[in-house]
Amino acid sequence: MTSSHDPHLNLGTDPRVLLATSLNRFVEHGPDEPVTRRVRELFLRRTELSRTELAKSEAADVADLQGLSIGHVEALFSIYDDACFAGFLSHDLPNGARGKPSFRFSQRMTSAAGKTTRRRLDRAGCESDPFEICEIAISIPLLFGWSATDPGPPPRVSGLVCTDRLDVFQRILEHEILHLAEMRAFGDSSCTSKRFRIVAFQLFGHLTSKHELRRTPDPALAHSGIRTGDRVRFEFRGERHEGRVKRITRRATVLVDDPDGREYADGGRYQKFYVPLHMLERID
Ligand SMILES: [Zn+2]
Image 1 (tube, rainbow, N blue to C red):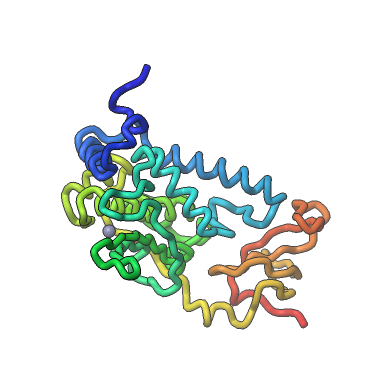
Image 2: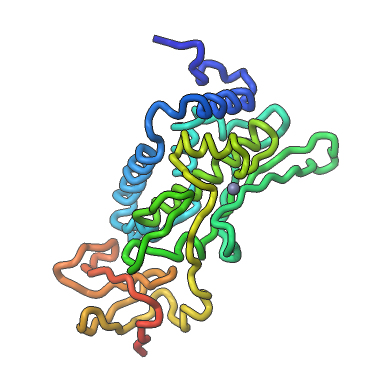
């Protein structure tokens, strides 16, 4: 059965109108089914796929977001766009606004976990025909300030308890996606407005617009000179281990030779440890 309301059949219609219609519909009814869980599953499945393609690269620990790239942010964004807005967040607008937003990781944002901004740019030599681009920035110190293995209570983001970093990341992105949708549909957006709060609740179950996240310690202090590729020594549950640093975020991912460990792309078998940087001692 085809429906005349299927937005895919109305590509000629102004995407702003369609976005405004969906936002208003969410205010009234909410989505047909909870979006967040479904998006999480789709994202994990897709990332799982790319993991197979990359032949067991170390982008392995997906829920902890090890190896997170802008490509992952784009993938997650487009799953939300399809699931919530029939892809209309990515359509160019008749007012010259570009479709897909650009994404950026920020090392310097330490009070806001995410930020959505619009910029009107003049085309060279043609000031009467400006175009607009949107950018979503994600704070790395806040996103990586907590890990599911940390002791103590997990953080609440948008009023929801997060079980892992992917949860944190989803809450942050959901909030920014709503800002983006409102900006595109209505020209501006505020997360203190009633409409924003209702849609955030109906669509994603968000209870507040606040994020309670710790930030990572100053990376310059934390790294204590240890770099990716260094051979290191550390102690875990009373046992000494030696391995090589594969990645550094707030903690280091260290691969230790282990004949029973998982096989990696370089043919070696390793056991993987996440070690706070101050517990590592460099060898050589
Ligand atoms: Zn906001």
